[in-house]
Amino acid sequence: MKASVLLKSSLLTSLFVISSCATTKYSEDIAQNNYSNLEAGKIYIVTHKDGTKKQKILFRNIDGDNIIGTAGKKDSTEVIIPKSNIAAVKDRSKARVVGGAVVIGAAGAAAIVISSLRAD
Image 1: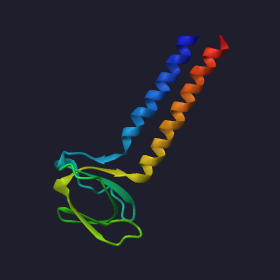
Image 2: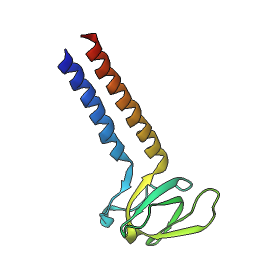
Image 3: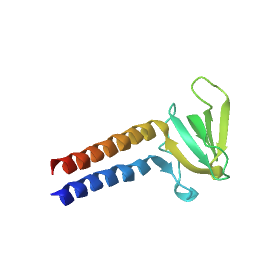
């Protein structure tokens, strides 16, 4: 009985860990990135190829080889990022939801394991 509960909780935890990687919108293969899934008015986290700090932008539009947005909802400073300098773009709202789901899932898996150990 212990093995089956432990196996189920391990699979559940693995599912949440794998789903946490689902927030990446684009990757380093520039040829496949047309950035058409980005929605105007949403906040994204942009990871740069050159290793500089991740940047939060409120996406507005795409102009040629650049992504244009603002520094935030309250900060109207225009941000222009060349597509060639982007390593990944992540949706901030989905990252928070998935992060919360991972924490809740891990707590649930731990509760299942602990309760199965106490049952014996």
